[in-house]
Length: 630
Image: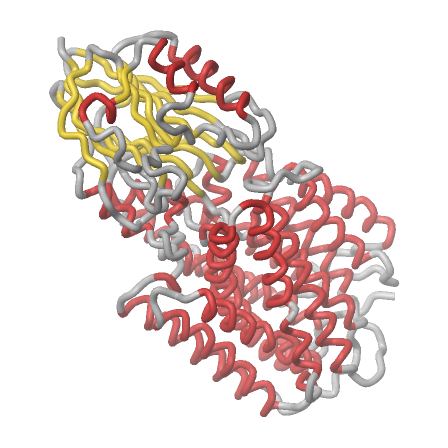
């Protein structure tokens, strides 16, 4: 028996618009909260810090359960409007209070999440769960377009009129949509409330990968506007397929669930053009599974408490999956983090298994027009890109080395502009960057490589490390003649390390610049030693060379001698203050806290060594002028 999800088209569109706007506001709240929560874990330190932050996050994301108090999901339009007003106010609070305090970010996301079961319950009264799914896709598409327009630097972190206007408009439109919904419906063909919890793993996959243009840009080797356009085209394709009402019977579900699990596992490792195909297939498979999970069936009166707890379960599952995936960079997990997206995909598939009938989710074809129209945003962003070119220069080169901490400053604020200003102040020709995040939620989903390249008008090269969305980068105004990179030995971890080497033209000579980020020695002293030996082997003794980065190494440690024995000199020890820290807040037990190092061959003339004092990162930028003699 085949039943349609759409019962009343007017109610469907009312629900779709309300859900879409709610998704946009919630996505922006969540992306603002995650860096703040992670910063809390870093402040506490060690594994217990991240576990504590995770426990707090789980409690915060259980907030939808509060809607059970007072039976809010069935209280009618008044409760709906009040909840959406609260959601909009929470979003505006983090827009107008900068820097965003951890407590405010926590309260804002909790207040926003309380609105979820109220919106869901209201939509179920006058539409059905098909409106939830299609509305979620439309909202994700709108959010992607906004992020493309801001070049992945979320508006919540930005000061100025444009960001404030967009945030205010979104909140106002959401409240208007809540006021405009039908007062009642009479639709009573909804799946059990527990099915709503499947949206948690579904949305976790969206924020980590599928609706993350920075992730696709990094993995597929695309420019950010092209990646955002690809994401929107995939969204449109999913909605078009939905409008054809595909049949998804019980035998097909098992195959789709297996495909979703394998695809989720591969999301971490697939790169190049095949990443676009993988993102597209995984998105479509998840949509088909969610559509089947939401097959309508006769049901009795809505149980508001059950609905609220189901929304809370999905919300907790969302943050648990995102947290598990991200915490692997600091706390070794007993399994590969590739299992996290795989498990999320399988859970979505399991929600579709008990359904009866052969039904897919039915979508009005007009819904697909939304992401297609939104394609104009990345197109305009791409057309407005500044020209990134290389210019020849004489033998004197200014080089800057900087661990940018993903563009997050010492207060836990996502602020790539502060990073750019610190770099600009030294007017460098070559910039070596560590901890370059490209879509990680703990750094606000920012694509730091693309954002800084566009902002500084400098071409870049990127070498993945911990995964395909995090690593080292080198920006250069000078012509790059050759480049190479690779992984360094992996020991106790927790994260993979890499190096990136570029050869730049400096007139009559060539200069090799190598950037790297090495393992801390506290947990496994031998790993860093092996990494240095591998790095020196990759260098091969070619001169002149400049080797720099966050070495996680302190003066006096034995590993420093490995560089010196290879014929390199420490630039800071040679022409700077050997005890001047490169950490923003030196640890008490390390008065000369110098995790960042620059080594060079003796045939380079060195001058103007500077360590800049700036809160843009937990590390300080280091700059030096080198002269390459003929």
